[in-house]
Image (cartoon, rainbow, N blue to C red):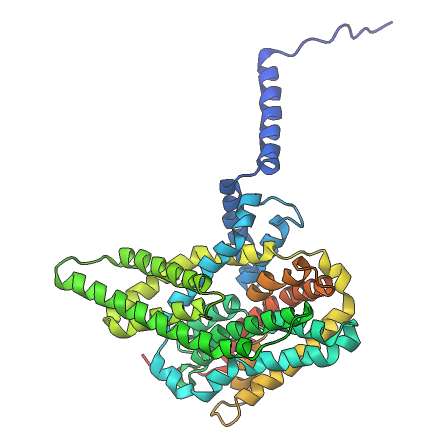
Length: 438
């Protein structure tokens, strides 16, 4: 007996519609990632970034790790799911997010506590970074096979602590009163804010030397000038804003706190722009100007107003944090870690040990005990923001050391950002004493 299958029956209209709908859905899904737009990219940054942060938090890891991993995965060197338009403004987005946390830091900073710290806070702004740069100058030529000047360029790239990692945690410690009786978070926060300026000026000087130029005394004089002008300009802006808010209130035109946040943000962006406008004429630290402005607003305003502003910037930070760390992750070219190897890891570890010695020297003749000093060493480990911003500059300038500098910078971010963040989060309750202030 023969069985004949006959001609295949054509699919009915319902089945045809389902097939077409499925094919269309798949095509649309693929198109979303082949032809990304900024809204799609932002959706991925927030949704995936927050999801990864929640997973890390669940397994007792810092949220920053999940955000960094998200950036690396979504970035141009892995899945490449972020639109070029958002990557082109990545540095601006990171800077905006950093401004928000610096404003919160300034509004939370107690200058009376900072005065108590004095000398160690000033030393923390330059000594640890100088020790790390010195370590690279001494050992990198032997370990990595580069010249002394190239080693100085590498040291300047890696010498800065990350304010994006450190400052939010110090703000949290001030809010929860851990270490505040000895002004430990205030000291670390002040040092981390100035540390970047010191390192970036040195970086510009060493790059000039690597290109065949020479270092001028004026380049080094720009460091204190940049710090002083930043503080002065920021203080003037803060006093001006405070007077404007008080005058409006006196004339029964009360400015809502939400509107104050927008005005303060706008002024902060302007202060950062002043740094760019005056570049080549005089050095001004925009970041320090932002912190100084926030401190002036706190001093001149009623306690309730500054507290409310600090709370509102804290809420803004919830979104800004995701943007900042995902964008930092997206700037990391994971491929370069394969070229760096064990020698780079050894150099990073050695430099961190010598940096730790620099931190310990800053803390001599202070009332801090051994645990508190160890906490300060840990808090000065993480690197991310500055390294992501300037790590690729030597390569873009065509310097022979560009590839190895970027490789070591990438490794430093991947090793020290999670290590420092985890170290701070896991040790502050054990190493620091909870303050007695209200």
